[in-house]
Amino acid sequence: MTKTKKTDFSPNDYVVYPAHGVGQIVSIEKQEVAGFELELFVISFEKDKMTLRVPTHKAEEVGMRSLSSPDVVAHAMKTLRGKAKVKKAMWSRRAQEYEQKINSGDLIAIAEVVRDLHRADDQREQSYSERQLYEAALERLTREIAAVAGNDETAAAREIGEVLVSRAA
Image (spheres, rainbow, N blue to C red):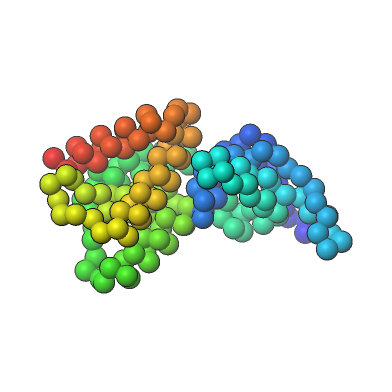
């Protein structure tokens, strides 16, 4: 149990938890569980009004990571500019893949989902489940880009929107 890299994250750091997106470490606390003392990251997901406790020694294993670097954000924006790649598989299969990408916590994979599910105004309607996946991916992307840039989500959403609209032209 000596190879814990708990110094990687500290209170006030923004982190990405794969299944929930961007959260902020509020504190690191010790708790006794079944006679063992555990050290936990207390992570707040303000938007979802949720708090998560992650054992510090499990953080990496569950895929918790620091915010993406500006390079990764630039790559994600470039991905958005690309042409949508929609496989010919059945929707249920594609939906499953999109869901996995969103929950992977990988910003580029999330950008791919946004790119592939984005609809310009003149394109066919989205189904309810398509729209839900699109909005989930868009929200994750927006939150992380805003957190990396240190600005609000409105600015990040505008930037993403501009990229998607310019692509459709």
